[in-house]
Length: 195
Figure 1: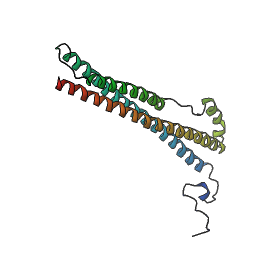
Figure 2: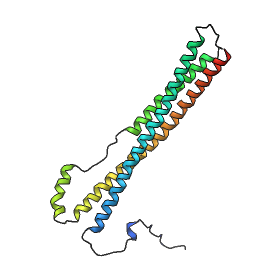
Figure 3: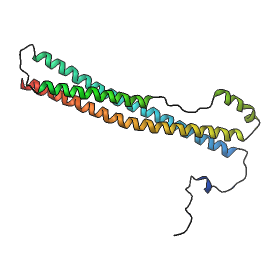
Figure 4: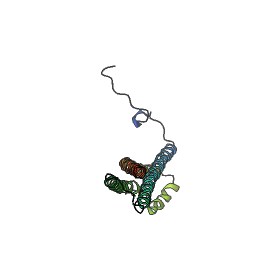
């Protein structure tokens, strides 16, 4: 249909029909909804934190295994007088450097996931000041709390967007570090087999 006005989406407030005041019950429902969404964003930030810690731990563990295997194999080969092919040392140094640098960058990005970003919150004193108004049945209390929680929700979503971006970047650097560690292990074992 050309020329017709766009339909309001189901969650657009303009699509709500006018009703009669219900002494704040609808505001209470809206407040619970906004609080629930803010809590969900908090849980989302916790998941980002857990994922970033786990991926960094896995990449760091692989780095540790690669370094230990490199040291062990080289310590076993050198005292026996075994010759190590000329390409082995530059390959080990290069893969170790790539691992170190990529894990350093991954730590930086992971820190950005863990970072406690600034967000507005209700001060306990402000909440205490609402008590007499709430006891008096003033519907503006719910309205003000909804506005405050909407701000908290907005801040959490913005901060979680930053965390998601940092997690994605950190994941790539952890992957690069892990691949470099695997290549280093392969070099070590080829050196062991060819000596």
